[in-house]
Image (cartoon, rainbow, N blue to C red; front, side, top):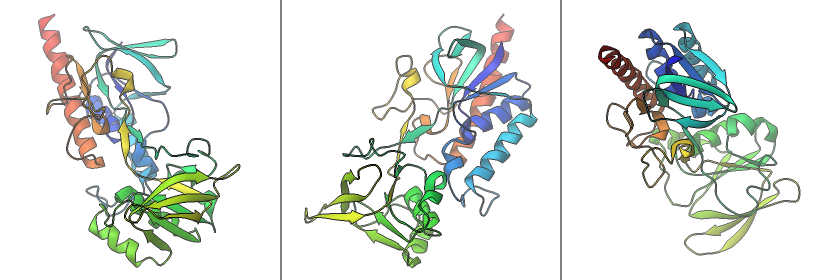
Length: 306
């Protein structure tokens, strides 16, 4: 049995693993895909203290190595069920059961879909949610990025390095991205913003060939020929695993107090999966550190009472 199980190895989960290990807790991190979460799919990180610029994958690898240094065990598998009530918490990957005295939920968030015709049918055949993962497949081709936040602009800048043209399609006339990113985008001649526009359909026989666009002001329709579309319109918390055991907000985020404690004793939530005002790598790391510290205190208090 472990002292703490951490589900998810994004920045929040990794930070929790580092602090739990330093506290002498027997720690298990369970990850279904790869270390780093969404941070690992980010081309360049420029707002994490101590690094003026570092790639997402590099930062993720450094965090993973740091957690391993302090003894955190890591396994790769999809957690299919958890039992959160009681003094012993349980998590299953398939038929394998893991137990711990506390659990930290760090499942993060998944990309939000456009929910338009052709999107799911052509996913993996021109429809992508990760520019750093799939961008190289579109070298010398025309692509579209959908969104107006930091991720969308970062994706467009990254793709402009090897794509012929990058169309940034945004439903509003102004972006939400940081000013420094907006300036870089507007200076880039290979990026062509298309404002006040929605994607209504993604068309193509076996791969993406063109988009049907609709202007939000004039309602005019137009077709745009592209070979790929990168969707960057936000995320949805990956909280389905615990939706019947914990209180969620209307947006699906887990409610916690400032100590990351959920409504069940010994169960904590960190990072993009919990309700807060800012979802960033730096706040995720802070969440993980706080949660691990609270787990150590929780276990110590329980032990004194036994």
